[in-house]
Length: 492
Ligand SMILES: Cc1cc2nc3c(=O)[nH]c(=O)nc-3n(C[C@H](O)[C@H](O)[C@H](O)COP(=O)(O)O)c2cc1C
Ligand SMILES: [Mn+2]
Image (cartoon, rainbow, N blue to C red; front, side, top):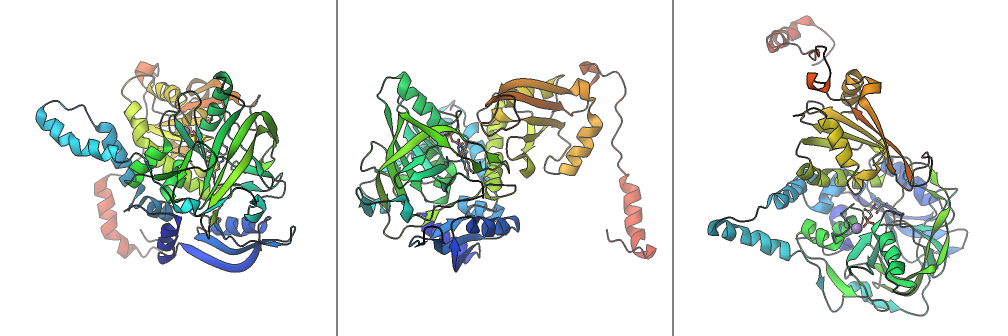
């Protein structure tokens, strides 16, 4: 059974000692970040700050703040309700393997799967806890314990929202996690980067001539899989909430918003309804980002809030990003594992992939392939740079299948041995992540692919390729037997 809501997941985490309640009064300005950063880097639990306050504003908030919710492998597995994330990857693989049925028998076999698929679609319900309280008049963001994360941040930011929009062109829904800087009690920035779903919808507003304003709903806090869905780099035409239904194996229940023509998860803790306006673009930032550096000021639309709905006693969910690894590393890890089957579907030669924490997702991607024809590593590079999400990969290292991409020492050792840099490094130009601060232009720059596979004669390599050094099994066995008698202080 999927978690009904955030609370049910919190209870589970508490039973597993993966969630700690803190009674101490802690400041939303910087203090929560410093505490969470230490806990996060030590592999610690999720934290519920029960008494957040602001010394600057002289406020004690009545709403608690939850953070580091998905910040470990174990919590990610608990969120997905699996023993290992690979189990979910296998379900995705199965789904992708579904072939059109040939005979009657095949059709009958397929029916339960199709029924299962249909049952993942979101369900609209009449009412839900997300609207226990409806505030159209006297609501204020100042009542929420919104954090200022890092010293040079331009203000306070909502950091873990599910931003829901509908395409003015296709009517399709998108859910994305985009931070929102608080401008005043009812206005924030909407930091959807240029390549993201929300930004694309906003662009179509003008192209379709559908007025100057676009409805936006922002949900904060939901069952963990629905929250995670906003982070997943799904193709543009895939509804994150359908995918969430598939992941949790139960449809996401939605309620209609009060003041905008959108729906939000019925189990949400807090919902902000409102609009963005083509004529109201403002400066956003700076913000201490997941690169470990500040992203500088830039221009983004302002989000005007027209109505706030919530539970009677909501929990506000936040996260921090900064020097890796942090909570978002584990979200990236889930992305890596869940998307491996999708990558394999398009590139069957891919054996495994890994994005090390220091590469903050897109700066470094390691891919192991089974090479069957000359130039295949280059083909994989070009394909990766053509994928949504993966297109931003700045350094892409392709290795042979015998290299464990999760072992960075092994990758460095073997890749550095195998390259003739001038021959094996390839540069391309293309779109880069909007947070990229070293590229020649914002959003446009170069990427590097390293072909660290063994080179073949058919790739123009005429010299013999040496074997890797491995001791023979017979000698190893002999030494194993001899070991206790050697009196060596080394355990093997
Ligand atoms: C904690 C966190 C914060 C994020 N903040 C932003 C953000 O401010 N702007 C943005 O464009 N993407 C941000 N992202 C990444 C997007 O959520 C991610 O690219 C997602 O796939 C976007 O969905 P979309 O493709 O439907 O737009 C953030 C991700 C995480 C985990
Ligand atoms: Mn999307």
